[in-house]
Length: 457
Ligand SMILES: [Cu+2]
Image (cartoon, rainbow, N blue to C red; front, side):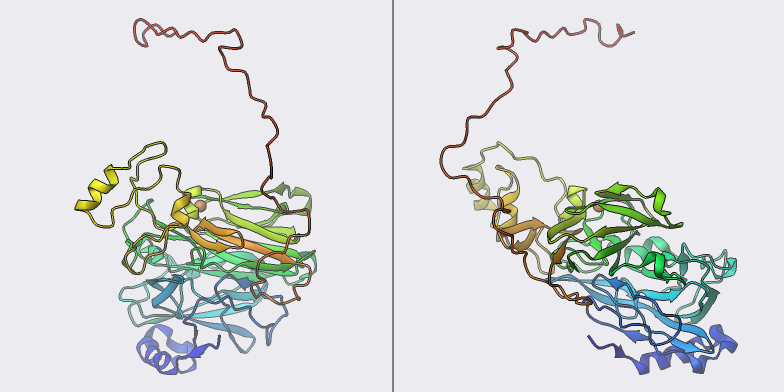
């Protein structure tokens, strides 16, 4: 849990980055805190500056700052990192300060921030402050708004936070590579007057995606759309921590999308309202109740709800996004009896298996040989058996006795008597069926066109 402070590496960066940092003072670079694990780490209340209620970054953390003459100074280090996607799989990514995504930056509307960015990647980079209103020269587009941050160099960005909301940061230099490698983070600007926006729990995560061949650890960086690992903050279920709350809590979940496709995020249980977009807060009278929110590429949405006791699934509604790396081109086998065939093939190909003749549920229970460093496609153990999910899936766990500020996994929900689906004992009641066309006296007649499509008018 402790931040590992890496004085030696920071000192090295100071020497290399002196020219780019210039008069701001290389010797005065703020310490760059690092983390090397993926535990959800709720930040402490701000030690100085304007007060705010920190966000809880799912499987992430917030970067400590240094207050210098009234300016909040952060230090981001772009570097190769090792990220556990879920237990059993590590990915070699690029990120910031030891992790991908990088740490969440938090500050308050009207704060002046100064952000040092040291480049320890093997190629130039930059940072774009996605959604923030900044001077054009602080916007981070290499070639357009600034020269690239060369290898080993440190740049400094400085601006005043104009408005509150949920924003992101990512490189605007060789983006296809650098974002496919995991370079991104959240930037939360808290409102100056917190009263109209008060919530009890405030979660945040980024939707991201990777293409990592089963058995390997480095993403393929030239993949355009066909990613095979769908992640929240570079974690896949069952590696994504639950969102834990107390019954009755007002809960906000901020979700940004830095994948290359949209994700309809669906939550079971309480209905929610969309209260924030990239453009700011949605006025109260303009909010509408919802159970799914589609988040387009490059967008963010904040949703809010009143927590109801239970274990509620929250997931992307694209069903292939709730699976881990799966083979493409697997044929549909439902209804195909391939006994005999499997045995014959297995004589030639050891470990050959047949899947899917009764659907794919068996995948969730199957102990099949996987290459090292690969997650099962459908996995996760629940209180009633295998959950059979992967990818963009987690659980909102709401308990009557969850203590304020406690984000630890609350275990499985204990359902009150009479509120749990159960197996029916005895004969099922007779089933009503729709009448078949023959029985309805209206025979189906099909007339084929005699001359192709030419006769259509
Ligand atoms: Cu999705």
